Amino acid sequence: MNERRIHQLFEVSILLKGAHALIECIGGIALALVSTESILSLANRITQPELLNDPKDFIATHLLTWAQDFSVGTKNFYAYYLLSHGLVKVLLVIGLLRGKMWAYPASLVALGLFIAYQLYRFADTHGIGLIILTVFDLVVMILIWQEYKVVRQHLPARQTRI
Image (cartoon, rainbow, N blue to C red; front, side, top):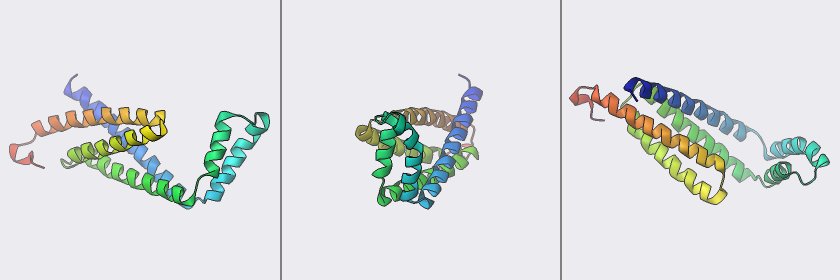
């Protein structure tokens, strides 16, 4: 694959990461502002019609159970996690899109840490979404690494130091 195609894939993947980061930030803020009672009320409204038709509906029963067990501490953890995770990724995406040299290794380290945490969580939850996110993060890491090598080749020797 030529440099131009790799660069295009890099830009698309970074833009997708940026969009995902913004969604995480919005989700974190929304979660911080919403009460656990509101979450339970919404889950009741969503699941009630389905549970009237089928009291053993897999998705509805699990959603309702999850909402009933959703504590304030859990809500605060997820709000903080989403917001901080999103803000870190937004900062890195901006740095990458602006071609800042520090952003390449910082992004590789951050994504590596996120992947380690996602795999740790997968071992506990077995959520397929974590595997999909991890595979995407690995592809993005490869593209970042490839872009970093290309960018470093085109810099004068004194600018290749970070």
